[in-house]
Image (cartoon, rainbow, N blue to C red; front, side, top):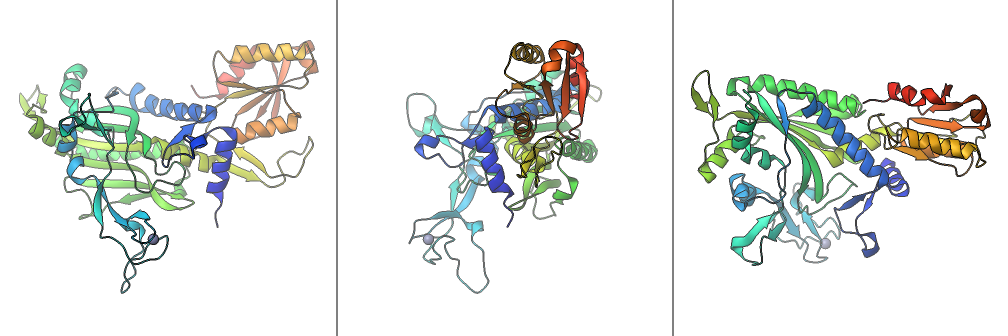
Length: 446
Ligand SMILES: [Zn+2]
């Protein structure tokens, strides 16, 4: 049995990447807290994505829309009518589960996954949007929903964005933000959460340009998987066949990953046609058309939608980066023959870029190490560690994926040089302290 998930969960908690929310109260299913390293990893992934999606592109703009929107938005989007999972209750043990979690064996009645009882309720739709109230009255008129996706904010804002951007088609909007789904069975660490974060794009095109734009974003998504260090052999591009797509979509590709617990969705790419803009135009009675100046004509653009779950990205990036080395890699210093863990994170994503390790706690060596740390901190997140043997400190940094370790030793005070060790090659180089920032800068992504 593959125990990578258990090992990763343990590392994530022990080193402060991610752990269950509200732990003193027993946690709450599907909600997680990101610790000091997790928040850095997450921010680095978001920045890397934003840079490629917004900063480096002429045809894209950013947006941060509100988490709670007018309830009519969810009527237009179809979420109020259709965003539900089939829910079944076991009458014997009271276990509640999704209908698709029960293996259907032809000729035998469905049974409870927990107690095997066949005394089950019929499947009934369970609304997955979190409900709340806006204002002091708790009645139907004030009912609101926490958004179950970031996409609708970008559709609803299309008329205003169009006039702000003054761009010709094709152009797009990107958004990174939280969304909420009351999943019946959250689980597998960050795979299925009730509070999660999405990185989404709505790319508006002329109808006849949609197939080209689809291919372009598919290629972008392949590139992004490489940026994340995700091996292509564990990714499946699943073309959704006719009859299984949403009725308005002429093409959908699910990008699936072979998790330790099975092949499941990671990202998605869909041609949504003009469905969303059409719906919002119909329900709001406002104009959602694009004005084509040259042709002096108005029409509804089509939409290509690439969706990236941030939490699943964090999970897969960690799974791909996790490496164990039996007996350790060290040959020069003391080898304790333990299993060594190296987190081979893309440098761009590593929570700490550099760690400064003074060889001894004596002055003036400590003072010099502190000074170097403060200097490097102007540019990067830098760890400082003066506890335990140098071998143990290297391993602590390897385990959290720090690309460079800088050792300050007794000679450093005399020759003004330090030793820089590379996480992956374990090569060590003697570098003048004055050149350290430039040395790291040339080896770390912007
Ligand atoms: Zn049961």
